[in-house]
Image (cartoon, rainbow, N blue to C red; front, side):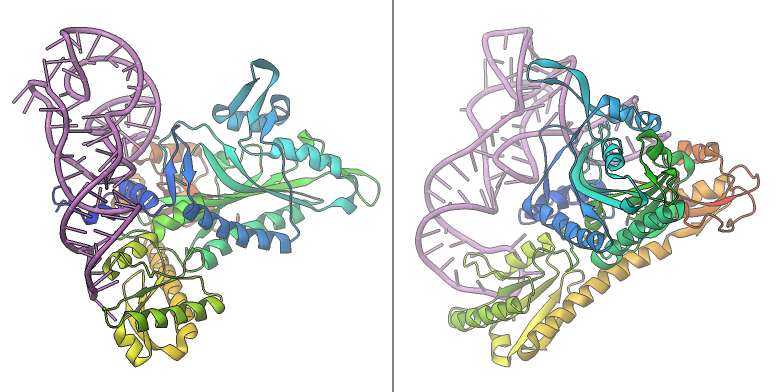
Length: 490
RNA sequence: GGGAUCGUGGGUUAGCUUGGUAUACUCACAGCCUUGGGUGCUGUAGACCCCGGUUCAAAUCCGGGCGAUCCCA
């Protein structure tokens, strides 16, 4: 049944596309109507509105505090990078060149050397790390910057998922040994994982990128992958062990205890506002945005419901609730707008993603109770007024658990095994999700699948010595050396 | 990278085939009304994506651009 013809006027205030059937359009509508972001006048760019930015701030606050307690310091490097710097690491040039935006003029004068708008900052940060590193006593050196980068891809804009400019953090570290650098790589990957598990209510899978898809110039790229409800995988964060290649290119060396010059092992790791795209896509529904309480700008909305003769007592009661919750540190708003009826408010706060609603009418006032409603499923519960904060916090925890459980079920149901071209293609085509199969390690076997169904190897098991799931490659039949996870991806 | 669809007040949309004063709802604002799922009334304000062509006349037809969405790779 189509709602195109009979969209009621009332509904056009809310979401008119269905998540299940029109995922792309639904997503665009949620982002705009929940006031998260808008399109910029140039293709590929977006404007992030205060509600959207508030979500990013939650991501920042969490990650930033974890970084700081694990030895990372924030710094800031220029947005523009001289071409000669970029060129010092040839793989970086090759990997990013097609999507670098160049500044060629300052005012009316052509620059002697054109400047790259950073697509990532290894090439300007590493030289400075080299300057600051003299001896093993200066190591490890851990820097992070919160900034935006530009990658001039000619693909369709999808707010947060795919934009030419995006906000992220990029961490860059230098270490004495491969072991330390590898440990660093994993520390950051685990922190990304924690962000998804504990803050964004999204289960993830950790893995390694195949060689042909790793960070240009790096040794190993690890990834946090999140499975979206439409069966596509989202690369939700990456952490790279860069080996000594970058250190060599930019002279990042140190004197060890025996006064010998040694080359550093470096890492870099980044997480972008894609995380928000994943968050929105994962939890939201046909009513609009759904947010876990951890990041919701308003965790609770109190909606008063009154009649002429009960107005004052209901509002008084609500104001008390509001004051109490606020004092207990709950992010709460009281929607006491006079000109809107409760139904309108319910819909509006649901559209905006507020996780818990407290409804208060004369009944609640008389019985000294509160009615709590969970955003994800509309479940209603009643609690004593005296237990306000506990009941509210329980409800918030329950909402988080529900969101996580739903996402987890989606992930668990959508990891499948297949062997043979037909089976791999068929499974991917029918179900989406991840398809595990043996892999010989040859890129052309991936290409074969990619050409037919636009799915690629999104990850390999994190542990390199993991026994392959099949003895032979699921595509060509040669001996398998790895287990490959095929999926369509964002 | 290839193909398709689309672009009208802040949001949703009618009008386009057959060229001539642009439709309605909603939001916003002012006032009244008053509330257990998008309430009712009155008033105000607000739009044809851009450039070019055809024409007496273009939202409408033609060409190009820009932007969005979808499908395929």
